[in-house]
Image (cartoon, rainbow, N blue to C red; front, side, top):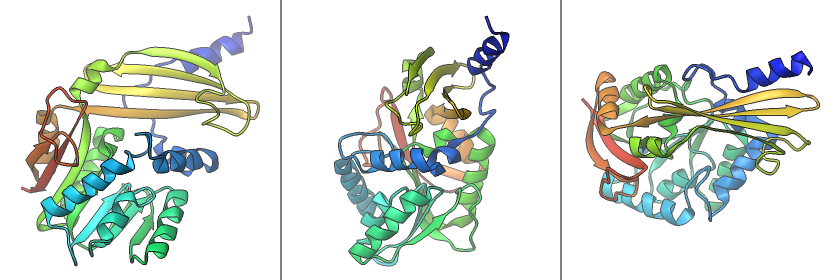
Length: 283
């Protein structure tokens, strides 16, 4: 057997330390995968890059009513994607800012805003690097984005939230629960053109290794894509939370969770569900 091949396979199946590598930006900025992700965003029949449109309509209605989002309310949506929430809240007269590092998604969002006659500010940037002197009434981070960040990144983001939230303002976000973590299992697979060509327009072999980290309550879906031109690895990390662990991170950031729901449409909290949502304010 070719020892180089054996060494390559050993590297492909090696277990990294939790959040040792971070490749989320590459997923959303690559020419091919960003197009795939936008298509998932806009597919009304799947909950992949974003939730189904019917749920987003319901969620936007609940957010507007529960938080009093109306004319002049200053809203910022971190990880706004193609503007599915920003456009709905801007229609209610809110002063809306959206941040995302996918230029393709923001191009779609800006086009839609022009068509609908909406004045929405979009910022093409990694939201971990975003800074502003502005202050906001409502901060959104939806579709469990917080879970894709490591502990140090989450601390940076929550500190940012504290610095830009107006007194009396509120933060709304959702996360994966420990019930969802319990359902995950470790696995390994290899397929030609894994996920139906999602990772490249060229022929490739795709390796997927799913790792669980019991102590940290973290999972990793590690994709290794082998093409004739080279090999790349994408790390899809997810942190899972209990209500208590999320409250602790907010408390350390100078924030207080005031309300807990099953989702960002205001459904009653369910301890057995795979996700939960919170509303928070300055401590």
